[in-house]
Length: 203
Image 1 (cartoon, helix red, strand yellow):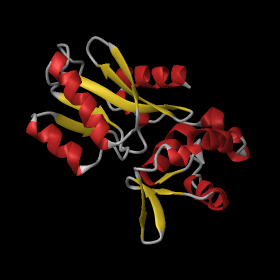
Image 2 (cartoon, rainbow, N blue to C red):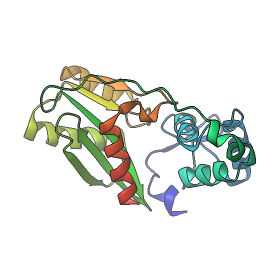
Image 3 (tube, rainbow, N blue to C red):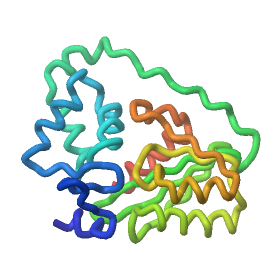
């Protein structure tokens, strides 16, 4: 129950469904059916995880999806012929803090906020007491007080990043917010690869 306990202030019941942000919390007995639906078109694990993160959540969901795709016989048979997902070509920034990429990583019950500056590839990682929007904004405030406001923030569609509270905060400070599509986690480019590498090291 610990993964649920650490998110207890972020969990809500809405129309008899337990939700975490905009995502429905899936009980264990329903996960096979959800996995089957998510894998209906046989996406790779990265694409499937990004789709899942837009709608559902359960503890260790990423590992469950990776294992599910690894065991899919159809995917293993067609893997050599699979075409890479088209990349979104980001314009290369000309200065520090022009564009930053952010994401959350988990290590057991601990949450880490990861930020990468797209120009310098400088990485910042903070251990967070929770992964809520308010905690995210609080960390952004202290960060921006030290370095100034970035021109653009790039994130995925996680519940911390799609809230009206964060949108209002970024708008007040004239920061453009770009959210990567659910199917294109790798569209963040080199900076996103650094985010993913940092997340992997934290696991």
